[in-house]
Length: 465
Image (cartoon, rainbow, N blue to C red):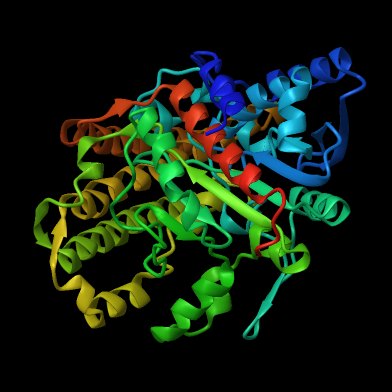
């Protein structure tokens, strides 16, 4: 890695908490005021709640680069990386010259959603507090999954306002490089990229190794994702999911998916943009990296454990939706999310795939078994937290508008207590079975920044997509 990049990474502050939307916006305006000849700030659109979305423009390099944080609002690691990187770009001409991009930086894309995660942003950083205060919108409301798509008869063109705004920005700047700043809740480090870059894999691994954060070597996020190298995957759009579902006999795919495409597919198809994702964890368990140690069951059996757990959990979530259907308003964001995340979208196709694919006959590794048996339960716990918040949201709405309905209020409060018990019981189990630690924010920012620097620097004089 170049010396100028190494110095930049060494100077990352030891961040203790994540910043809110208001804090991030205030810092962006202050930066533009401090460096008016180098930095400008503009609104590139509105959120669903009619709030401004802000973009920083920094420098005047030969090609355009776009970076955005919070494509999912429960993933703020990228906001902290952009907080640091934008300030360093503004004050460091040598860095701007070395990279030779005009930078467009959106610290928070799903700003409304990040506000609904503020209950955990300042800590404590425990799986209990995270899942209890978690929010992630339903797929058809996600800013990075409502880009238009027409593929094999599947059609989607109902973009949310934030997606419309980003499409317009991408159309205007036609970025050469895009850094989509995602992160996972639990696990290790892994990457997605628009095209293979094997010459950079060792450098990417080194960025994680330097901070002593292991690679994620368990199951991929989706069963049809085939690695380019350990923990490195090709970027996937909705086209790949449609192909997967079709290949295992799924019918009425429009009723299964209900989402659009992603920014990567949109920008690559229209402008040959290259998109990088560096996925990072808040929480870590040593079993994540045990990909060479045999587990206690076959890989097929471990996936079946996950599928059976999900079906049972979804039955509870859907019972909550059914029992509260008359009290919960149609636009309650938690209702929409719980409804979307309690559908067994891939269950039938995945069961058929693991039955037919001989790769699932072998003994699972500890990492794969951990993903299927424990991590799947952790991620399901997030929906349990949103059931509580769904009822709380409605109680808060009643209070704000002065609605007097004792029966409705009593029913919602009873569901809050019931959902709290369900959530607490699941968290008690997970806290006993997980041996987790919290990864410091500084380490995560370091890895994400280092990987972005490596790839953007490599790509600046190449057209490989």
